[in-house]
Image 1 (cartoon, rainbow, N blue to C red):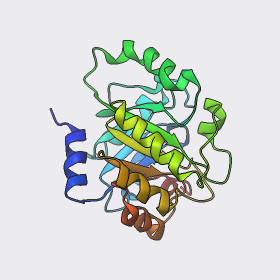
Image 2 (image 1 turned 180 degrees about the vertical axis):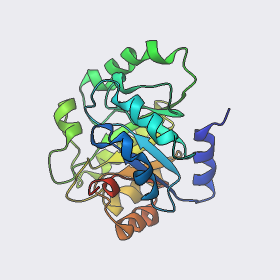
Image 3 (image 1 turned 90 degrees about the vertical axis):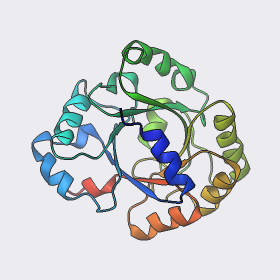
Length: 231
């Protein structure tokens, strides 16, 4: 069975940049899946599926519709355990380590176990770090946690290292959906220099220029979602 984390590691080692397009099931129309897929950037390597709040069963319907149109790997990026579906290829097993709400540090993870212990999903432990993107985002509202200020670079670096030291396989820096500005290149650079595992960066990245800045600063995988907002 194909495993995606080793591929991410190899890409990071070879400095091959990856691009994931994030699809929010609540904004996705299954009947228009073919149109969505045709609009994917040519360099897309992965599709992430998930949202802060998603209607029950909508994630599974979304994944099935996407799978009918593309062979790109589909990785779950769930806002809570109810969004887990066996129809995807892998799961970012997220822990919101920038916040101190136990529900999103370990509570949701425990609730997910019944769905995962006999699952064929590739489970990738991921340290999720919310960074201030200039406006309140859905993650902040749902989790009841505050993002870390972009000026607190040392705190962000130490938080990322705490994630790595606790056994996480990926670090995900997130400015939030619809962020006014993305994670700064200074933050990305400092975190990348400190960690030994792949770095994902998302939130507020709206075009090729911002994408390139994130890559040049050290992001191994960039996440973009705005490609679907105008459909």
